[in-house]
Length: 168
Image (tube, rainbow, N blue to C red; front, side, top):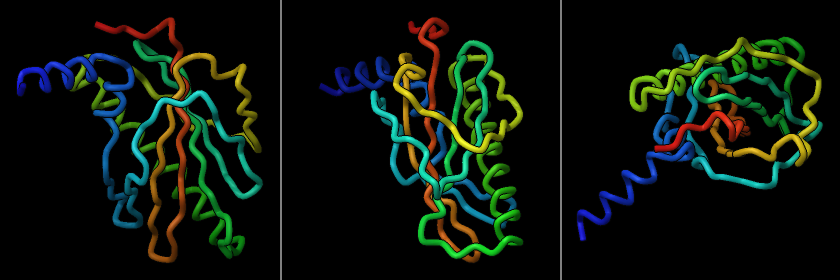
C-alpha cells in the first residue's frame, strides 16, 4: 500500500499542477516588512472571478518551458488607506509578488528542471478575465499579505499555455 501512495505522489508531481503546487511557498518573509502566508492552496479552475473595484493588480509573464501569465490581485476592501500608504502598499505588493514568483521560478528550475523566466511587472488599470482568455490550464491560489499595519487578501491567477506543457 505504501508503494501505491508513493506512485500517486510521483504521478501528481509530473503534471503542470504538481510542478506548480510543489513550487509555491507556504510562507515568505519580505525584507522584514511583510509576510506572505499561503491562505488557499493551488487549485485548477475553469471559472475566474473578475477584478473588483477594490482590487489592485499586477501581471507577470512566464517565458520558457512553462509559458503563460500570472495576474496577482491585492484586495483592499474595507481598508482605510491614505494616499501615502497607498503608494507604499502598491510598491510592497508588487515587490512581494515579484519575490514570490521569482522563488517559484527558481523552484521549478531546481526541482523539476523546467527553465522558465519571469517578466518584469506589468501594470494596468484593470484586467479583463474572460473565459475565452483562459482556455488553457488555469490555476488559482490565495495568500495573506501581512504588514505591520494590516492584513490583505491576495489572489493569484495563473494561466499556463497548454501547448508548452511538458508532461512525463
